[in-house]
Length: 171
Image (cartoon, rainbow, N blue to C red; front, side, top):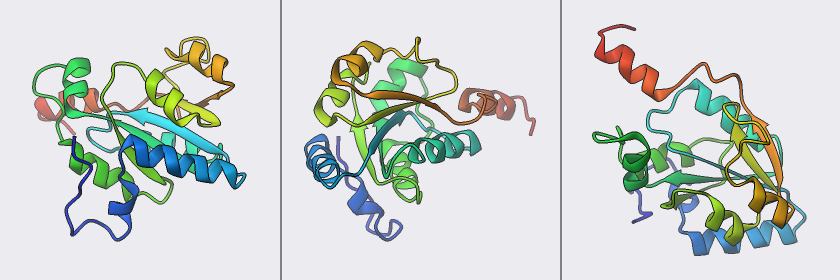
């Protein structure tokens, strides 16, 4: 998966979209400087206010926010045919343009375990559709000493619901 963005991307956004190796180096640098690093993940097919609130709340858990963004193929596995609605490079550009996001990297796997092991963030942020007990990677978080933070507002916004409303011709 290419992490390359259109040259016309928001200034600075291109430098914030990286591969796992570059993310590992930056996270290590930030942690060595005493900065608390938070890792969030998701598909972010159609960026909406629920996503923004989740990411801002995740960033509030530390000084740096890294977002593992599901690849197009992983979104298809999770959501089905016809998804994602927006290609990875465009989703990455949108996320990297947000003030609260420091890095965006591709996420290909079905779980976040390998990414957690590679980056070893201080905090693993999940949305309010989870509890600390239902986070799929909670055993890896515990093993590595990574705190779990449930972030954002109630799950009142969802891309799937937005798509359904649009298909019905509603607002």
